[in-house]
Image (cartoon, rainbow, N blue to C red; front, side, top):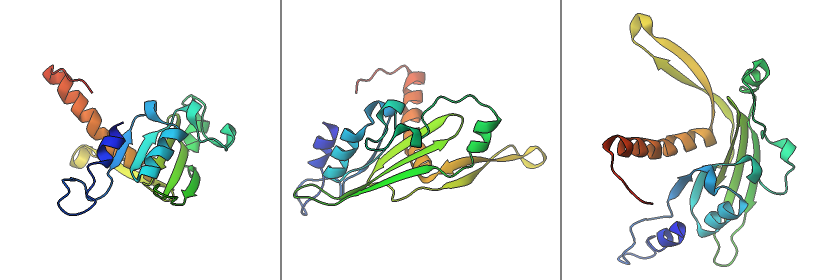
Length: 177
């Protein structure tokens, strides 16, 4: 329903009252994940990124090809964190009123299994190490964390929602969405 409302706010021609030059990218929680919603958003021309629940992995691909088990933090899982993510890519051509889009599902191992689904957001995915640091001068501590394009896009945009939720909780402001 939100996507339908937002679609009406996209500028089709100058002066039509729209506020977006193109369909915006949205980041959602895994509550909304699944093939149906990703395809719906892709056909409407929106970009979307969300975590994917273990029971809603992309259909048509056997579950054992993805990371889907709750994993204990052991040496095997720690080593698996630095293996490239499993990436499934599906290009959907435009059809009639529907926009063409690319669906990418990225499955990787971190402290547990992580699955990210995107529509119209990225074209591929790969693993790299992101440098993190804490402290100053002699007490500075530097380490690396495993990351991928899908994970960084999700964390970079969904973190804003967490920040807003935290600020609202501290101010004791009530809201409904």
